[in-house]
Length: 283
Ligand code: DGL
Image (cartoon, rainbow, N blue to C red; front, side):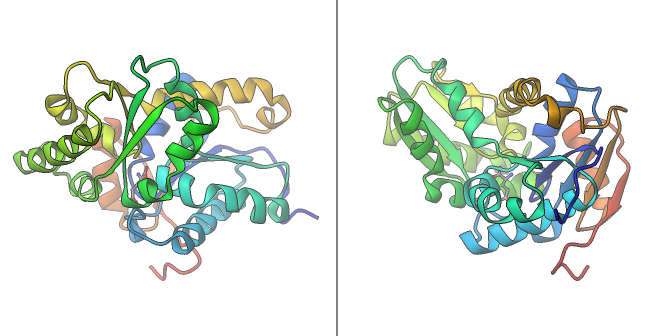
């Protein structure tokens, strides 16, 4: 007997904070017919500097909450969670919760897309410390494109800049320039750049400012949205369990007011937000 029986419900999108909103935005634009629920674990963000076990536990609690809200499918709109928790959730937890439900990440679809973009066969990945140290991108890229050379660069200060609304400030220039320069120094032949963190699209104007002009930036949101559409076309049984009403509910583990203000910057629209408790967030 499944712990969370399959029933009709919205698509769940999860992130440690606001970053997953850049994924949600593109998914909703492509498939506005479905209902959505977004969960941001803002009380415990950032995940990028946390250990494997902690990211797994926090992500597990969040996905379980989304399943308890009736989601037949959850997207981890977070590279760190996709790198450190996705496999364990799929293997350890999903079979107990309900093997018919699905949890999907953002790394695999991104990797599938880059083969068509790079000409030099040299790809750069920017991400949190957790994502870069997990080597998830080079490992997944090597499976599909063994000839592509991958260089990773952790950008530990970028998520705090975005979360604190400083992505457009002069101060942000220093850290954007610094990490880009470090990456290009590792491999000057890079012609394709993966923004391997869902917070980074907000820094895109600055990233482009400091990036050599011949480098293409891969936009993760659109890739994940296209890939999900294709996945739902191929998994009709799962797709028929998604409710169609075009609604979107937002939950945060932190302050509702704070989430509302920041979400409006990410999405350019007013959002209705509710507070939600996860197992060990006593807030
Ligand atoms: N947005 C998350 C990602 O894509 C990282 C944010 C965090 O460090 O919590 O990796």
